[in-house]
Length: 102
Image: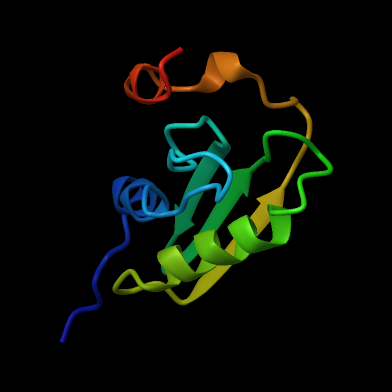
């Protein structure tokens, strides 16, 4: 049976199920996901938080890891939290902006 192939698009879709508990918008539309790389069955996600001291950081990272791990064909998931460049509200998608009323 051939292995399912993981795509970058599938990873982004999985990450859209992850929310910052303090903001009713997923991490992709918030602009918190900086990079996704898929190598065979391994996935690397580089993301940030709305601010470096965010107490929800470990929770959001764990939720992101679990969401990606659910994809068929994924073996290893690495979530890296970075704070350079710092997150800015400019990174929020148009859809999320209208959802938030900004």
